Image 1: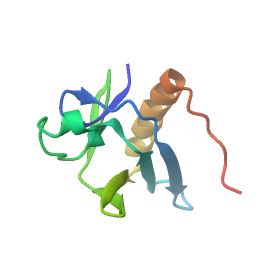
Image 2: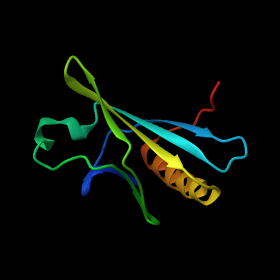
Image 3: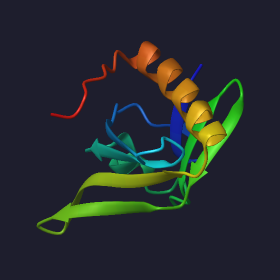
Image 4: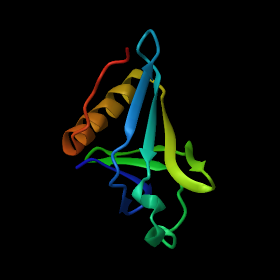
Length: 114
């Protein structure tokens, strides 16, 4: 099972838009996740704790980024953007294994950049 959490123990049910970039030699890259109206913003989540990062969890373990930013419109949180930095080819392969599991479970499809 592949899940995403912002607070440990609470699964995010909104499926994000994910954009990948990769260096020319393929060794590094970034993954930008955008969650529109994520469940973590629901009023009943207020007392669950602070958002401490984005945790990508699967049977291999976890990948973590602390680069998590809320986007506000008219003073209300509307989206969360997270950037996961991919530092080397092994990290890229590991991230892609997570994304394959996550996308299969959440009907997320891949389309190349135009």
